Amino acid sequence: MLGTVTTGQSDRSRERRRVVRVVLALGGAAAVLALAVVVVPLLRPPGPRPLFQLPVPCGEIWRLGTYPGHDDYDVDLFPTEGAAWGRPVLASHAGTVTVAGINGSLGGRTPDNPKGPRGRGGGYWVKIDHGGRWETQYLHLLEPPLVRAGQRVAQGEQLGRVGSTGNSGAPHLHYEQHRGREKVETWFDGVPSGITDDDTEYSVTLTSGNCAAGRP
Ligand SMILES: [Zn+2]
Image (cartoon, rainbow, N blue to C red):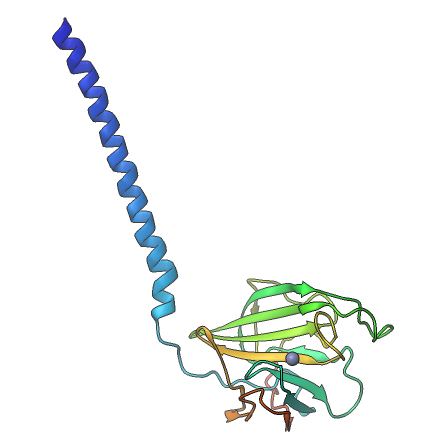
């Protein structure tokens, strides 16, 4: 009798050890899978630069600039004609929206109250993944973006309107291009903008070639 009881306890403890081994193995497999899903894409080299266009309507002329204290490669866009408030902001290239929301805080700068309280960060903003580890960002939009995360957008599709939400002095579009994990010099229509660092105030005037609205 005693022997049988001992065997029963030993069976149970063997079963417990087996369960522990299975749990550990599953945990290990999950860790390897997470590593593959998260790390492998980061190691993948970026693809070729998409043919980005200015994030504003075809034919419009805008001044692109930067200033000391702005980060390297960051671009602020101002129209050369007409008011900036409410102007359409377009996708530079086709892609998938990864963020459409609020960065920092909105503040209270509106067309009716342009000197209202300044917010923090980017305000209403949109981020688009163009594939090949290329990404663009659009900040300080006037209102909630017209697109939502996960949505596929075509080149030239409207994302929102120019505003002054977040940490913005006057209505303008703050725009960035990223390759992999780094911010890079912005290129438009295959030509580098020349906006590379924030040591000095610098600007360039360009005409939008974002003329293929609806291109998938
Ligand atoms: Zn800016």
